[in-house]
Image (cartoon, rainbow, N blue to C red; front, side, top):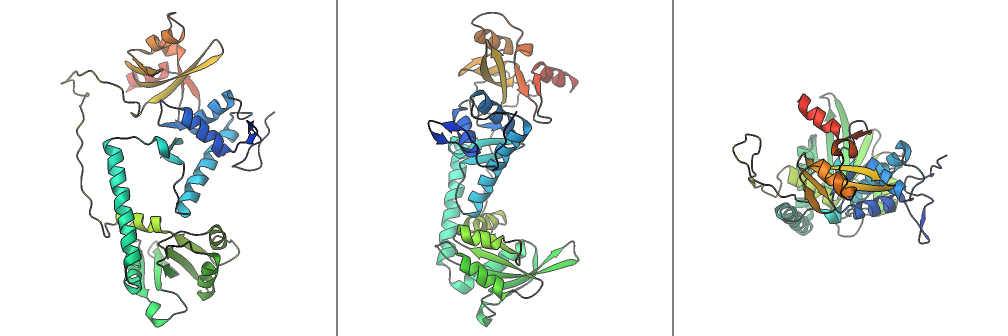
Length: 348
């Protein structure tokens, strides 16, 4: 019988005397997955179960691991920090520290540098000019009837506007703007809420981040709702709408293998997207990365067939690789022999 923890972030697992959370377990599994940039949360659970870190790899435990990672990513974003984890969509997760190097990493680093410069420019702006800019941000987000009110001393509210939903429903929003470097505290959230009139909602925008008490106060379900946008989120919004930045198109060429014009041997980059496959032989689990029928990565060596990789596992004994290796289908979470991949390819 499985014993399910009371929290999405805690388990009763002990490792070297240390109590492990679901986040600790996920980090350890992803850290050890050297041949894959990301893993499906069900694979993370299965590997953790194999290592004895969790008591079950069923859907409940696997779902708890996924929820814990998603919560950490959202929490880090709200607090203006960088999570250890990255979501690649469709239940796939990786580690920030394992992000690929090379040209794509250079592009990411360049964009992050520009965002930091943009944030510094916001901090250097005169207060009223910054509030005018926030008004323009709100217009891009779909707000109407934007009014910058700070000069009129309207109860500490800097900007007002209406968010129109479906062309008919109008929500009156009052915005407090703080061009700060220090975190916003709970008292500032309470002051904004105290300035709201009936049927109004609040929005707090800052160039810094929010303390944990201020986030808790903003999310209090028994009080008027207050939405929060921190400095990182504000800069991301501006970049998305081309405010203060220009975008440059980067063209990257790659070989087109689909038309048969070229037949060039390809090397395998461990950062290339592949499908994780696995098998059990003499009670031990083995993992490999399937890129194509003639490109399989096992123990940092490339094999030209799944059978060749399987033969390596069995120390030279021949094997039908298509029935030897298995994979987890992301669509239904079930385990299949990789022969299913070949059959699906023939159907197409």
